Image (cartoon, rainbow, N blue to C red; front, top):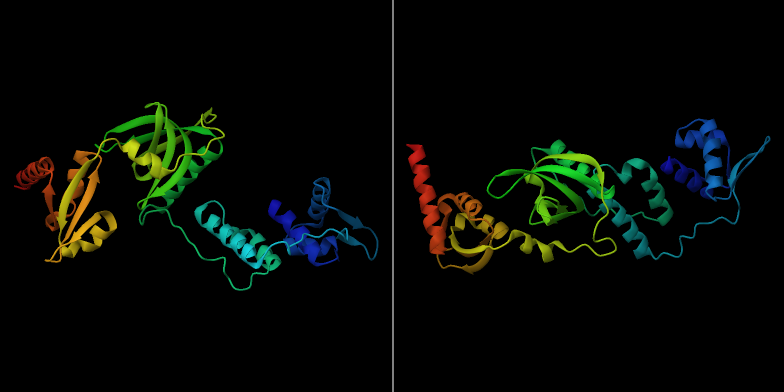
Length: 306
């Protein structure tokens, strides 16, 4: 309805007077609905009126003008680009589909298509519907201040049930995270989307303890939530250099074409599995404790393969 009301006002700003029949055809509703919309707009303070008779129609007061000249060309472009970027991040709202965007582009004078500069796809290749459902539930919990119940897998694959107060959705290192207050740990935590197995909205609402304060940046809080980390130095085969550049800290380009890299492992059991995912394309240089654990895991794998 808000979209339709905006369209009516915009069309009347462009045309001094239109009949209810003309407006109804333009926005795709009945004439009766148009008259109800006119009443709503009038109650909202918009100077709109209807004249009866042969030459009557619906119009705005002549002095009602939305001044677009107060915005520079650069500001108009930024508004359109920002709206499109917001649309890319919001799975329940596509401004292109509302009909408002064409009106905004026309009103702000966009003719070069500067607005379409960003597209964000947060879902994985195989679980688009599942990822979108999770995203929408978490977003709803944040906006409505609603307590959520989730099943979450920790680094060591233990599944725990938690009640959380969702605060912010974050993106870091190719992954989506939920920043929330965990009632189980009685502290703020980051929860990786891919480890949230189930989520349920509860009737319980909450008021954020940090109301009025700026939420901490992920870069400032993430390391604290991970706890102590083990720094591992590795040599990565040149054939896997693409992965090293994506995931590791590059320390040195070796003469043989390999890369000397570093990785901070927050959990040893997870870290061993991660290192093994490189197969024979990685060599652990230090620390010795990680080298020994890696060898033990390989021995177990060999035993299981027999």
